[in-house]
Length: 173
Image (cartoon, rainbow, N blue to C red; front, side, top):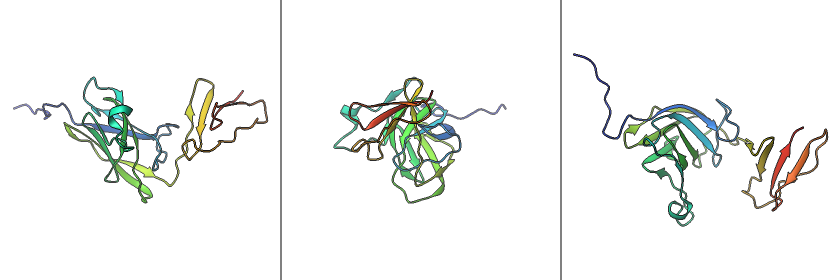
């Protein structure tokens, strides 16, 4: 009798292969409360389902979604905000947590729970998002309510402040 793999009518359960800071994509780097985190793997969302949250229908009374189309994530056993889903990537914001060091990340779909992936939780996990090449983008820690403080750098670097003076694109020449 041949062995058969078991899967539900919803497909295969998710598998996590990596968890990274979504700005720096540094493998093995820390994640933190409120940062953007990318989870990579397989079967992380229903086949063919790839989308961002719908701000009009899924952010209710200022509360961000913790599930999109049945895909949810826990970090250290606490629900994370889910911003983007696809079968191979999920973007989240980890929940408030006083834990530091190794924490478990689990993705759950209609097909079941993923393997438990260990990530390093830190107080801070800075990263810079790439913008149109060769620029990077910085945002103030208060989510844009104060100036970043762009200034001209030495060594031939140029800067371009955003219209609101709260974001700054920096080009290294």
